[in-house]
Length: 337
Image 1 (cartoon, helix red, strand yellow):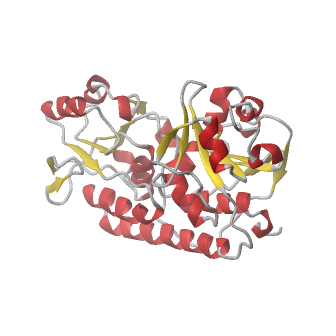
Image 2 (image 1 turned 90 degrees about the horizontal axis):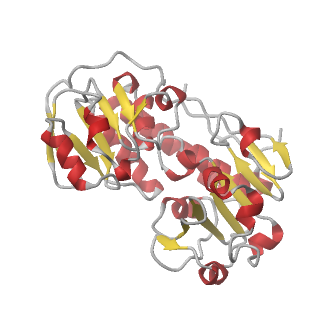
């Protein structure tokens, strides 16, 4: 069975869900009170995460034209380097985890994957750490690069497969099916996709019972120098809509945060990640960002922080992320214990 912890802790009037460090208490700031976890109303069964022995080759070589229009021939999946955390999670869920020998820093789950050799950040990749792991296959999405580094890895004789980047919940199933096909585990991929679809359907059914549609924005930070306001076309915006919220941001998927832009949106609730909040120094520093205190969310303390890998990746745990968001936006829908 897949591990589906739904730990949540309240921060002021908001909710911090599934802290991203090993010790939840050490990463939260401000007064906190524990709250019972949310569970999906419909139970689903997914493929076991227990790794099966590594496969030295797919049954027959697979020729695949990636999202970057590069054709790759995949004949050996015994040593895989993964450049995105969501792809890593898929591989472990479908029983191919024992073939993964290296990951990028966005892999934080499952714990056994997070303990593997790291090759850096997939979007600012260097060829040497990847090649040093002697991979037989490298998998990433369209956000990884730069392209010249991917070409260097290919020049070393390693197939580098680039798949589409999923930015809506509707694209989770195709992503799971593509990754599963690449490693010759189509059946396991179909079962996993069915399970994730069922979890998302159960969550959206719950969201449909909400009496109100709050205005919700996602604010991303990597220290005070990197502040972004996500908008329509980004993964958080897709989750917001599915959770019964409305994203009022006008503009592209990723916008530089400005007080004017935030005040124009004037959200009822601001969501972020614990990594973002901690990169600024904590909740107080987050609330001090320009424009935050002037919003309805800032004035009422409605700030919700999630585990970054859980919330941004749109991977196998997206049903869990959606359920946590629904409970955060609509506390009245939280199951009673």
